[in-house]
Image (cartoon, rainbow over all chains, first blue to last red; front, side, top):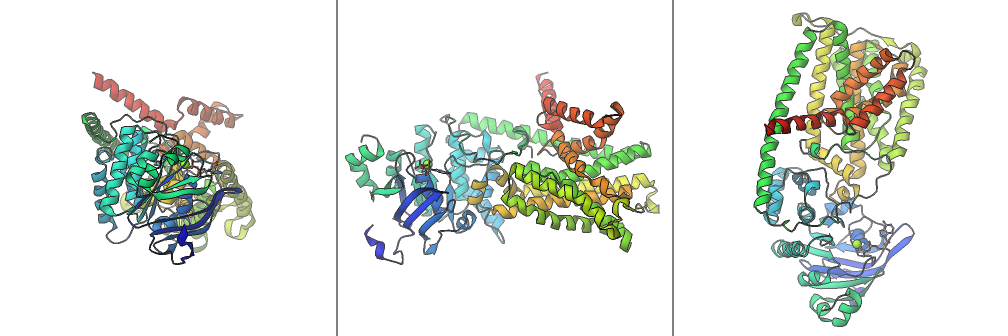
Length: 251
Length: 370
Ligand SMILES: Nc1ncnc2c1ncn2[C@@H]1O[C@H](COP(=O)(O)OP(=O)(O)O)[C@@H](O)[C@H]1O
Ligand SMILES: [Mg+2]
């Protein structure tokens, strides 16, 4: 947090400065600052109720904020969620937010909702193919309603739908929630592949620190609305004391 | 829309919707999520095959229904033809209401007002300017669309019961408003008009001609609603219904699509009102009292919310059940009407369309077993 004096946000792709956010009178984030480089995966760790979900919501315009959020130079703070989405931020919310009565393919097409005009039809078709490439199981279920999918498939659908936006920044909120370990590992593998192949910048919130640190380059530990620790994923992974006090597991 | 029937129609909540994320979160994974194993492939294949079969049966049923609908007026007495014409008129209005309530997840207790707008637009165009009747249809639909847009604005801020109340207020103030502007609307006396006459080349009786006009409008309305729902706009409306927050982070502007749903649904009601004036040849404020709005909503719910067949079944209900109740009990038709609604909702919580779907599946299963 030493480069705070630098006004032009430096070379960081996502630059969050002194971000405050909350719901009504309840203030949840108290001055969070962090930077994520282009093409990086950044993990946000921390105990339940620390404000991780609120941080992602603040980034995508879903709650009131004070402070600055810059994506590639443009200020996002204070914009509505649909406006943020149109600027290339895809948010996979906690609990996935898939549209249960709609089919898998309809869900995916909604991901490309912001895209229209000439050539949109073809480019959406191409992106459907691309998403089915990452998640072949979705292709076999494309005409089924999303509500009939298993938990893991729904998470894949939620991520696939976010990819349909062609995001510059992908926000993932606890993708492992309620999933079997095997499925979770596979999901994180796919996230890493997406990041490698498309260069998408990812901010992933996780309770499962071990998994998240396995794919991330940078990590921040959030506690009661403040960042209490930042560093490279290896360093945080290696620091046993950190592991015990903040992440609640033994290395 | 075959996919939708598997989960039953969506119900709008009368209370403000709470975020429904998390409903399905704790569902344990079956471990084969990412691996499209043999079982998954097979079940998907079977589903595709069954889907194709269902689609074919549905196609056959639609063609058969249309054939019956075209043949019926040549067999029925004029009064029955008139009754079925009115069923179609109500069905068109309910197609609109179904878009709003069944697919966009909002509520309107004032749909009768847009019906009245269509009816009066048509009547006034006849009365004042002698406009040829085909031209009144687009005018009535367009005006209802614009007013629907304007009155849809409260929907952006209001949910559930609050929205119900505001739309009810629209229906309530309409009748005195129509009576007030007597010079244009004819006041409580209403306006009496000539009905469209059949062109000589058709050789049709007047009642048959009106029936076919209503049938044509209904067919167009069905196709329009179907295409709308399958379009990008329709997906956005359904997404807003299911999960506003998730729709918004996809880039869907909530305010715009909520208002648009109102406007579209009002447009169908306006078109229905126009055909109503053609068929009845008379409008008066008391034909469009609050009870009309409530009967329409009841008809839709009984017919089947969110189901393609719902509006047609609802049209039958709105047309026949009130007069049927009158036959059963001269003194208190309302009681019988109310009891019938309760009975239907008890037997078929997803409406008559859901009941019909269930019956069809049971028959299908029985047939397969043999
Ligand atoms: N919609 C809300 N309204 C009011 N308070 C909320 C809301 N959502 C979360 N909170 C509060 O904000 C704090 C942080 O929550 P959250 O961001 O969900 O934490 P995490 O995702 O780290 O578990 C908690 O104290 C929680 O009670
Ligand atoms: Mg959370």
